[in-house]
Picture (cartoon, rainbow, N blue to C red):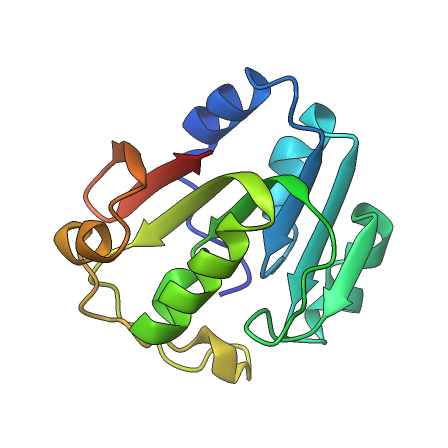
Length: 167
């Protein structure tokens, strides 16, 4: 869905705004621009990547973000360094190997990564967008920590979990 499940808004914003050195943000799969709405006032430059081209004009994303890449993040060559990368409801849309490759690549180009994941949540094609399908319907906290032990759990509720890695 182009609207991520942002039950964790306050926690993300509070943790983020305390890090005044974080000035550049990269938003993976922009969707409707919710990360922009939450974090823009705490960052002077925001870039993002969106694979579903129709969302760009529908949500006026080029007016919000300083740079919008219309591309598959798994194929993207990162040429810049960012203070923070945000993945809000992204990893469940990728296969396990794709998620491992993406996070390994992202660790090389940033100082911190926030990952929000809805666990054990099935989703199929929505809004005529094939990228909405969840490829990891069985993803759990234990599986995530087994693959990515360098992340710290910041918060959880019955479905959403927020993690952070910082160099």
